[in-house]
Length: 356
Image (cartoon, rainbow, N blue to C red):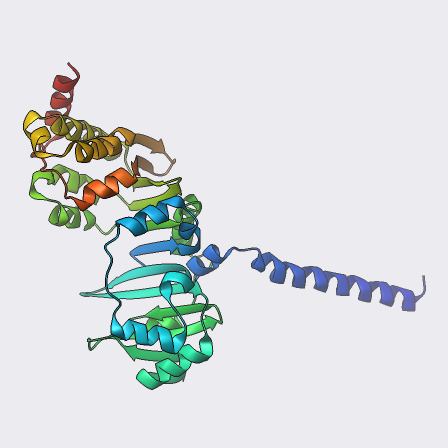
């Protein structure tokens, strides 16, 4: 074979390899859906990530029920002016938003990425008039004051339909998560499990969630043991998925040992049974309207507690449904709660009494 022909074949082979590599880099990356792209922008050192896909929620019958239930508020004049100046209204133009919460010492930083129908020219002009604009690390960064507050919100356009915003400007210069980063892989695994849920929260434990739960729980429902068991979890995930006119909610606590997750499972089952028994209490039945009582019973009967072995970790999963009846009952106020026993032994003994 002549050298010229060999050279041509080598050249063609190199070109074909280049095309394959280019195609993989370009089209392989573009196969990631918007959700994955947005989540990949969040800092891996976050303590909590919250997300909602508004486009998906708007298509569900449950959203209509939720809008009917939500209190109607008067339009804020400042927001009305913002909408007029920017042509952006979050109720119709925001597609999806994911928020990372980072605890930095005594302060808390927020970082969010959002997709939507943005008019970059109008938004940039409005931000320049009400705040400041500068170039930093190759990005055009805007900083605007919060209405009636000394704090500021800083944002930048990642592309014409995507923005990143924060209350800490240094977060805008963070490098997106890399696949080989262990923190990023841990977050990505939890995001993967929640892929079908348009509403979700992921909390990486710092041994403070139990105390926070206790502080925010009404006195009659406080349980030191529940708080202690929650503090032993490594991850907590919450997922909400509309199914018809109700919302299926899945809460999962993930820990390292069988003992703690088994105790938590027993405790949750006991609490569910006690709640149902409380709603059947004659005095409480006299205090509650029948439709309110039935709404709470409907939610409790839909609840299910299960244990999951994930190999390296063990999980407890709680599932329940939020229905239109429950939303209406919640509007009228929660029923008075009986005092929760302080140990699983008491709860299990109470369960046996109820079953008998």
